[in-house]
Length: 124
Image 1 (cartoon, helix red, strand yellow):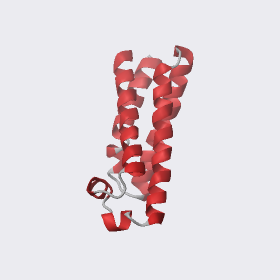
Image 2 (tube, helix red, strand yellow; image 1 turned 60 degrees about the vertical axis):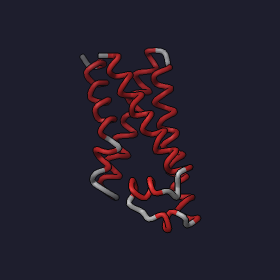
Image 3 (tube, rainbow, N blue to C red; image 1 turned 30 degrees about the horizontal axis):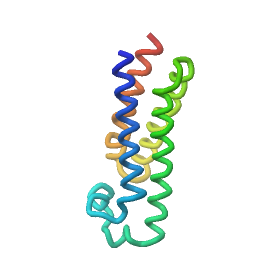
């Protein structure tokens, strides 16, 4: 079960590295237009590019924390995993409530699954 948890945590981290790349380096692009539902023309605006880059940086911090949680020693690892997975779930809930309901599952689904496995591993 612990191996499954590590795989899921790394999956969530990889997803956030992809989001970092998309928001910081692939704006404007057809892929970003498809993912975010925002035209490339709008994405080209300097203000929009800065906003996306800022969001991408935050996603990078989440990815870094999740990777740290896998590399850390066991007492610290569990706390880091709980904290960063909870951050991702809270962000997904907020995004679903304020922007698009699909964010809950698209961005939060793997983190919710990892958090459920975390609970099974650490509260069993």
